[in-house]
Amino acid sequence: MKTLSIVIPCYNEAKSLPVVLPELISFVNARDYRLIITNDGSKDDSLKILQEHFANESRCTVVNHKVNRGYGGAIKSGIQKAGTDYVITIDADGQHYLDDVDKLFSLIQQQDADMIVGSRKGQQEASAFRGLGKSLIRGIAKFLMPMNIHDINSGMKIYDTVLAKRYLPLCPDAMAYSDIIALVFINQRHKVGEEPIRIKPRVAGDSTINVKTAYETIMEIINVVILFNPMRVFFPIAVFFTLSGVIWDIQFFSVGLGVSTGAGMLVVSGFIFFMLGLVTEQLSQIRKMQIRQ
Image (cartoon, rainbow, N blue to C red; front, side, top):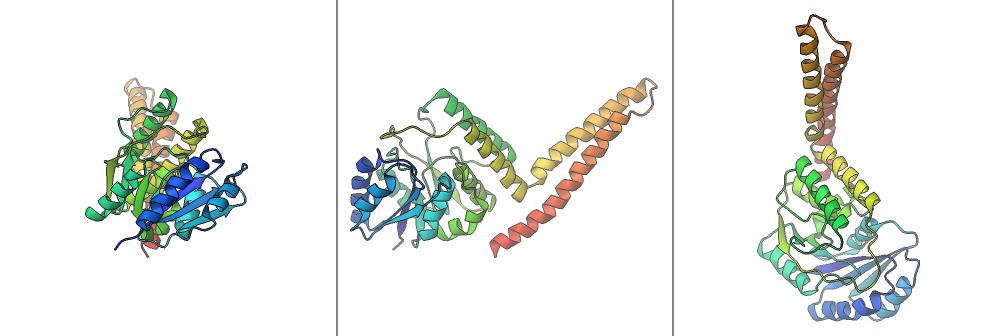
């Protein structure tokens, strides 16, 4: 029989925890799941509340960060503590329905999948700005790394624990963790599926996602693409510079102005980017071999 750990990052959720924890504890006890919550250096009473609720709960574990490491860092610490076949991540703000935990746990076993993403596709975003940011991130990710998963930044994902632990060093400690762990699984040719889930309003508090979060996520996506498929980034740049230089030089030559220095620099730049791509591709192959070991 397969086992499951629910991993939850927690930062300044003192208002949400008294509402969320009783239901969570009853849920895991009834199903023999494990619950791991990482207090990520909270400045409020989150740690105290967790310790009080978990004092006599053998299936529940609290991991404490003395200093805030970030959303991804909290999840990574929780996964490192998991000893079950699968781990599922959800948020501490009460937005996820626990019935969806059962659904995804059943589905990943039925499909013999390595990851199932809980998709919020079609549900109303908290704000138009946040929806636009997510769409931009998804668009950039799909351009750089073709995939058929819509909601890569969903906070609810279930995956194989052994694989998750293998790839944790590649994932950032920041909010971009959710996107990157999905992209890593996809790029490594693991079986990744997607299943609709429901979302409800936060029990309390406000989201910390902002423009900085979006920027960091985009940069992390570019980093992971360069790690696994660098020519996907370098080759288009090389082609752009080379073609621009050739077109520019043709225009100069056709009117009898000879060879343009600027055009020559563009062509050379294109060649340099292409060579950088080849070198990075070789480093990528070495890194992939290390990961598989």
